[in-house]
Image (tube, rainbow, N blue to C red; front, side, top):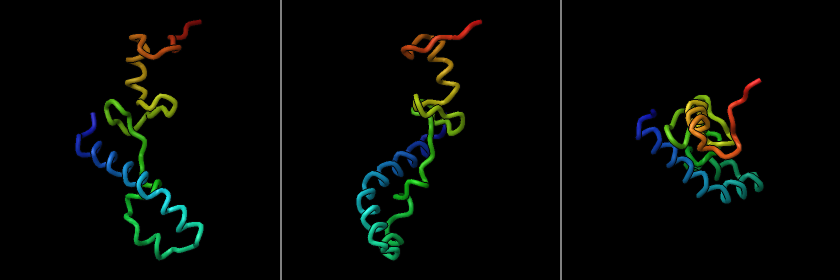
Length: 89
């Protein structure tokens, strides 16, 4: 499980990206690179990293579900994800 400070930092980045998204697109369209430099660094969407919504694990992230492979396996085995069943052949 990730440290709470790391998860909080990622949430802060997500909020900054959402807050400055419109301003960033306008500055890019105008070609105002000096204005873009003045925006906070963490407001760039490139700095975001996908993390599991439950544990904060940065690796093995499944985009479709928003959780890591470990959490996905546990939840799928418990039947908590609708439409997902264990395969057998």
